[in-house]
Length: 466
Image 1: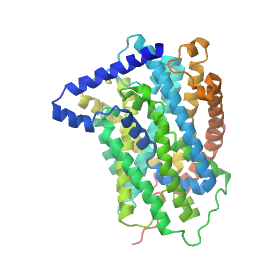
Image 2: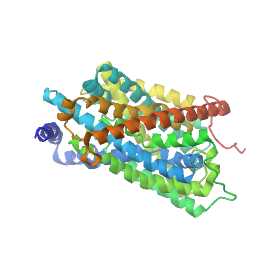
Image 3: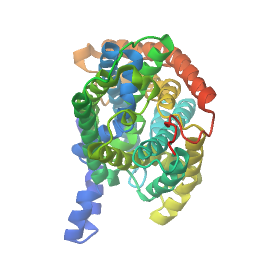
Image 4: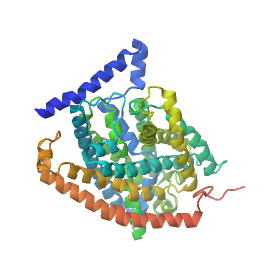
């Protein structure tokens, strides 16, 4: 009974909010702006999750397959896809728990976007909040950096008159315009388009590789080295750890309690893109991928490839917004402008966030290796270890379990099953993801720095023909 009451409380605020937004404008204009701008349905959340989960990673997965070998590559994708969906479910449970407790205390979230660190703070206190804030912000910061590096890496395959560093300057300026998008409600049309773009690119990679056939003398020697094996596995951990923005996406829903299965559905769709494309490209090019972390580098240049490059560029711009928006929120709260109604004031306040991202993208332009490093050192904690531990600590006492808004799934055998899965997730990610993965990724990353140097002008570019 309590949980039914709670659901109406949660849904209530959102219905009011929707109505206010709907009434404030003229009918036709209102309908149009609702269509493109105000998204809060289950479908919007699904599009946001699916389009946010796979962006530039799609292009580096064949590189991971060359490090792991075909079988391990496929198994790790399925395994981490499931594990990622599990921790997204835990985050959604903790969010609904936090929000319900706060709304019982009559807290109003009308102009406030709830974030992960606030959920941790409300349920577990300030030390958890600080840990959540540190890992989340650092991960999102580097997530945004990776999108910028990917933009420069991709455009180079269409226009190599400028080197990759110059392209990074240009795209940094373009991506700064995301400061004008207020919140995840307003990504409705973008998430939809983003997913169309990754779908096209994935199937283009698959079909182009199959038409191209196996390259001459192609070898498939993966897994050859332990370092490369764990680097590849960690890139896949990173792929399915895209839910550092889960709480913000949930908050943008009219009925956040419906979020539970959305992430799993998004992951299942994403697997239909990542498995065929990575397998096909690896089948066609084999070990050549070890020195080409961007799959576009090996695919034959034609109109289809150029279309895929352009679509991925637009999509990276969207994903940059996805990764950066939570950082904007944290920054707004820090300087005290988060609840300001003025869009211009908030946009100007957000600009300082973009500058360090731009700078880091120019220092470390190692597209591919940087994904694995971020995966092992940041994603492992942000997305897997902290949510699983937080869930276990939150519901440690019998009274917390008794009054939980969201009951433990009976499918797993109630609370005991739930705790067993959580302990496994923490143990596995700590040892394999952070331990072995961290060691391998750092060695690989240092190798890139030694080979190319920091601030390198053009990472993995072929020698220029003059």
